[in-house]
Image (cartoon, rainbow, N blue to C red):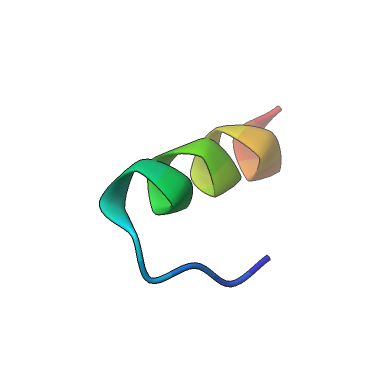
Length: 18
């Protein structure tokens, strides 16, 4: 899960948290 966009990073972080 690697993204350079803030929105993408936020979604990836949420996925990691869940």
